[in-house]
Length: 397
Image (cartoon, rainbow, N blue to C red; front, side, top):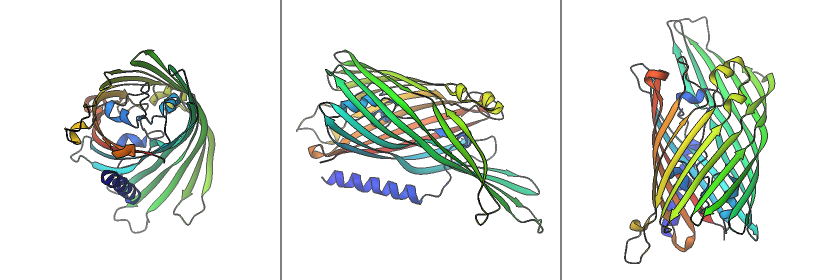
């Protein structure tokens, strides 16, 4: 009970820090397109290299396979937060370091009747927060990007004799990305600082279907497919300052591509688990403008990890019975680097630990990720990043 209270206090503090934080923190890359795509790996999967699309273990909160909902037998809620810190090398003398804490997800799961389960969740899809400055003798240009896309998901799943789990979900993608462009003149009194605000507002629906099949006694295979999203994008401009009226500049459709994800999960003697995932995103099909056709590319990712659960016993301490996990992942990003137009790769190692509470009230999953994004010789820059993820999964009594 005491540990549970500490965990709740920890999550509340993280939420307060995320609301109060005003620091620019996301990577340089997040200024491109719709920003940095946030991997869907909530739950145990985070510490296992992001793998878990086939792992129905009642601790998996991923949305890319709604069939995972069928593995839950209890009413649950989950809330998560993430701390991310990155250091960039851009070829200059300085190595900018940024950090931010933000909410990761919120989800509710409700079993309704004989293995049929529904769930609703809200989580970020992309983040576009960055600051870019350009200096010369006469003026300084600064572009600040904030916001991103979110996804609200309502899913329904069921089981067929516990060998096959099926699920489907309806997803609503929405959000806004704001760019603030400002120019400040140096030693020129007759010119005032100018600022222009550009807002891009998005909304659109798509659907996800998934399946998990137990091919062997302790081995399952999972597949998830998310269809294309036709999104309405409206562009609003506010020149000068916030006292000026906002004007509609453009309105058009953009495309979020289809995503395929498949994986395999195995458990040995109920203590040792292995998961592997592979995903493919058709981002080339989402390119509309000539620049996007040049810069967009299909994405591929692979993640794998292991989890070890020590044998429970009254004679051993609580901390020696904590399940631990480790993994690695590699992926390429959908938007190429600039001015060196090359594919950007991201590589990372992950660790995780689970802290169960008494009477099955809740569990706190803490995951750590250390990775590298980009390469100096190919992309002209690179970023080292570190992430710390907290996810609280609790029972609804």
